[in-house]
Image (cartoon, rainbow, N blue to C red):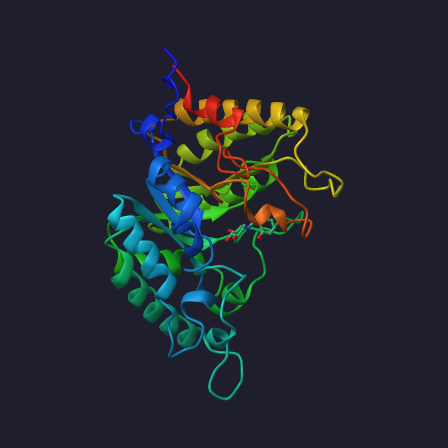
Length: 338
Ligand code: HAH
């Protein structure tokens, strides 16, 4: 039976209540108006798109900015939602003061660790009642051939085993939430192997890692996506890890496709997108129990980071709801399953 009755649109979160959480990345403006209504109806998990990144929530050593995350937490609590915490250790959008000592020199390992511990304690104390998963480390694996790890200030200063150390620091402050290693393209064969090796090594050394975040910045033309997705879920699961899809969007453009002439999505694009959404959600459902949440990196096509990445100012249409907040054919595919 179709789950869409008369003109009543089904709720995504409701349709998936026996499978996994359905999340969206938000800005504070999304908590009102059209996006606010969509959030209340279709989602039961929120991620701050930017507001909880180190550089935003802790811009200066003696100053935190809790205004936006507090509003998100209040919205989540009022609407029976949980949150994902994004993110503690990343090479982008991180405050530079963290890596500099009082003499203007590069901070020592001890100083950076002390600052990180303090930061994690403050953020966990404030948000752990609503946060069910933290992206503890984001994007630590190198894309280029040959290299295993991305060369970052974190790694240079904290040393080789920093990923384990960071997970231990977060575990000490929040023993309940799922602690996640998050990355992009980590379902693609090469990066999958590098990530698998890293995670295996860290787990063997005792790092408290609960799961892998597949960011899920995908597109409508990747012929290998479904096969890669299945393989990666099984490979990570073989380490005893859970999976969360943390930043899902299905772009109309492959990464290399820099065309800018489209004012709206073509019917071919929309048809391909429908198929991709159909197929990925059927894989997610197949791995129910292993996949514990699926978060979109946005709410509707009205605004998404893809409008500025990888081509600044080029409109994209990667979401399940169109620019007016109306459900697309892709939405029907995701919500109507047997
Ligand atoms: C993600 N990176 C980040 O995790 C998220 O915090 C940000 O808001 C958007 C996307 C994706 C990414 C990138 O930053 C650089 C190259 C490829 C993909």
